Image (cartoon, rainbow, N blue to C red):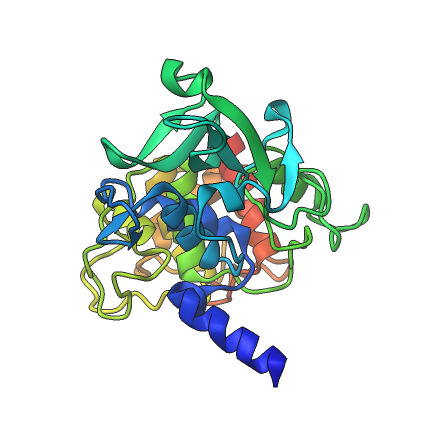
Length: 321
């Protein structure tokens, strides 16, 4: 009974728990969708955040329970050296009083996202003159069990190890809690959108409900709207189906637009016709060496994509630029 009450209490404390899955790849889109939200002392919602309210809200969406105050959050997790920072680490500063009085979330490339009292939710460099001299430390509250690029379920003989490891080392993919990658799980359309928007560093602070099945509090709404703005995905449909798996033909269309690949030779697959909506996109990805078919000469455009397959396609697209 005590355990049930504790779980129930966490659910009410962290309303975004409905989207929590332990996937750390959701962290950056979850945080960046709030850029521009005003600062509000004691605030902990999209109407307004203070610094610890923001870190607590974002981490709550990943199932990580943080204390309410900056001082208490500074006691959680484990200390991390500045040179060892990883995406998701909490960074702390001594601002208006002695001890930790301001906090943010490290998002890579020497940047952190935080609730500034003057600018609201914003992204700032750790090398900013004001924050650089006030930096006092960092705490790791995410359950990284291994070094970046290493995952407990990706062995040395795994067929996509090279690609997953490379993406992980560059923190393009973060995986799940305890350093699991879950390579055989499907890649959802929302997760694919989040990864693309993060990689291309798109603005993700548009929380308008463009699709009827993506509410304003969905973790990927900013990423999805960012891809719509860049014409990477079609906005003509009323629904986006964020939790549905992305298919090989959908991936081809998104990637072809994202990387602006050029057309090449005719598509060599027996199950892809010139009249198909994805024909041009598949042709471009084949020419760029991003996708290939099966031994029987098919592409299987309706087949769903696993996380390992997506990682391989993503790695090839990056290196085909």
